[in-house]
Image 1 (cartoon, one colour):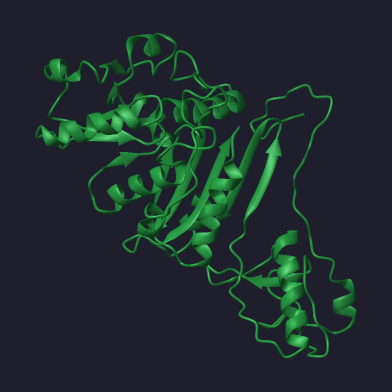
Image 2 (cartoon, rainbow, N blue to C red):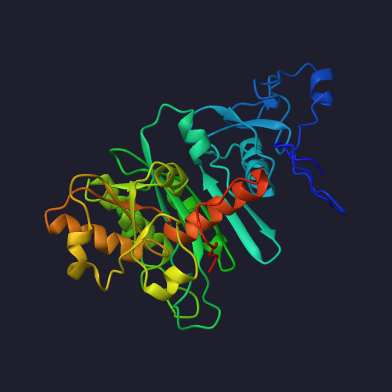
Length: 341
């Protein structure tokens, strides 16, 4: 198998996920109008250009609730909903077509990956003003034997705080967290709405401040200008330019892997080591998952040092991001060892 970079990897099997195309041959032969996305164009009641016909499912063009544009969505849940709406219309029952938000879930080995709404790639090509939260809290209380990190990304609109999408990857209930966000998306929910949800809690299943609530609180800090952050994708450039990067983890964590030119100032020691932290340049802080680095950044701000910036995702996120590209391209790592848990 040859990668885009030119690197060749031996493989016994190669799995390609290339999507699906709508089968519209019958519709074309029947003279039905095909939409700009290649699916059958339908109205709000799922009737194509011939009003005596109904069309639902993978072959039709649907309306994206968040982007306000036509799209296609080949999943069973929306198809079932469309079929019910078409049947209701046949019997004169009212139907409210609210469009789709594109929710997905997949299992890869022992990881679950789920997504709903918009992602960063879609938002970069849109006209929306937006920001992103990237957090990696535990999916259950850390004392529980099955507790695992959950990589969670939440996207929201500025200045309204309207939620735009979310993605989650982990060994725990990533789908549950994304379903919460999907529900809020269909109800035009905001960060405040998410923050105020009362969700089920037991140490086996969650933490008292669930992953999605955690993300909402971070999002509100960003929305209100109480926190400045940079994403893990910016860390390589910062490292190569010699930026002052603080690793706020304890010494044992540092020894197990760190950014090559970072300075280890544990959160437990930093008040006694303030003279080591420059005041005339930006200071970028990370820990394991961004909780301790957040605390250090806020403390530095309160001490009159507004030059402190949090690294969203911290070392777990840096390791995941760097490992993927390092392996694909063979470039020199910026970390001594990758940490994944």
